[in-house]
Image (cartoon, rainbow, N blue to C red; front, side, top):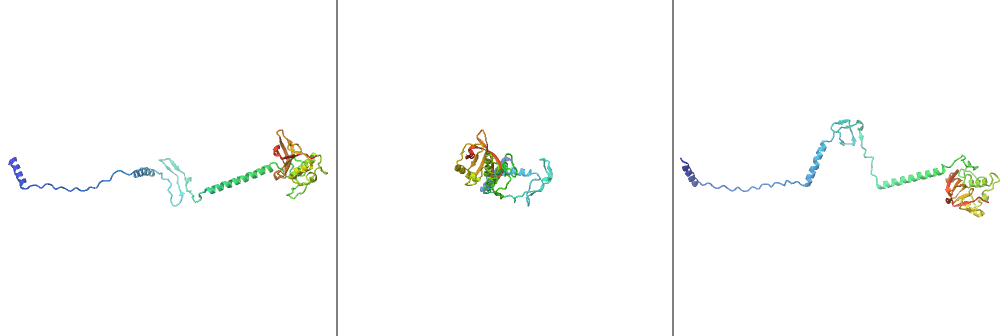
Length: 278
């Protein structure tokens, strides 16, 4: 059979048995894939987590791992990779947390105020010791001291009055002794006693008014042998006057020491000079 005859037979067969056209296949709804874009927060967390994994993996074998208590235990070992040695002496180190407490600002202020009070008290005590002890001599006659009753009991110690009528080792008794000495009187009968110097009272505060009542000279100019009168109930003897105007004083019972004492002061610090009585 020739090709043309075969083609003719196929054509006739198609006409007798026509082939139905292919059916349309309905479209199937496929899920839409999610966007592959990640949120910035997730990206940041991922970037931070990745180095942490590497750091955790790189921790040395002796890193601190807290357990049931707060005791850090270490043994001597060497890590070749890092060259670190943990000595046995570092073992059993206890971290004590209960011994600490928070300090409030009020507590800090109170502590600071207390420290200042203690410092002020120490400085005051030191100043008193310096004034009274450094220059005062007890029960021993000091150089330059010619007061004859330097070792007698004071009024607070149960002592009485000296032959000059003032209490032993008080400033007034020492100055009265110096006034007698300068007048050439070093024994009984005394030239100047309480009844002649300050009959109105024995305290140093009464000496200026006693000089005024007697009509004796007073002034602002220092003179050797004069009485330096202070309005805080104290008198001293002017030993010498320096070229710069300052004066060297000799006295007893400076700063309640009941002992011989010397000091240099400016003439302007003395309220009044009582010149030797006539």
